Amino acid sequence: MQKHFYAMMSRMKNIYRWGLMRNTRNENLSEHSLETAIIAHALAVIKNKRLGGNVDANLAATCAIFHDTSEIITGDLPTPIKYYNNDMKKAYKEIEAVAEDRLLNMLPEDMKEEFEKIYNPSEEIARIIKAADKISALIKCIEELSVGNKEFAVAERANRQAVYDLKLAEADIFMEEFIDSYSLSLDEQN
Image 1 (cartoon, rainbow, N blue to C red):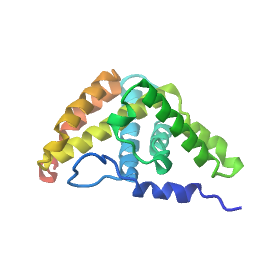
Image 2: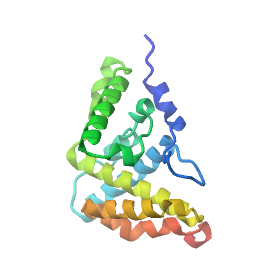
Image 3: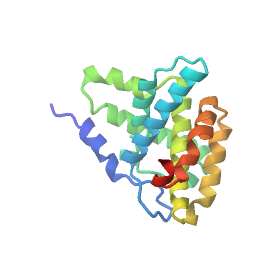
């Protein structure tokens, strides 16, 4: 019997983020997921090497790749709507869970257990992914501001604060050592 899971995953490239914002360059879910995975891996490495952690960096990156795949089914609901109030936030979480279950049911039975681990990471990895997700959003804002798009000024401040509000030491280290580079030109980075 044909299974559709991976064909559905390939549709991440068709889901565009920041739908309410004027973008100089559109960002799709595939791009966001890759960037979030790279950052999640970095955060796990920082935690392990500098903070005495013992996090599987590869699992953190893999979980981050799949962290928003429910949006293949739901679309990307704008943040002001998604977090409008607790009822809306709770309802959207329920919708995401239904979408994830639908995706899991597109896998062969013998593969589902692996993906259930990916869709339900440990609290420690979930916190890393949340930080990586916020940092990825911040990077998008920085990139837009760097080319003069003031539309992202408020979102940049809000996402920057959201990263610090997580109180995650590895995220704070990433911010201190890496985030400023995203506003530099290629020549300035060399």
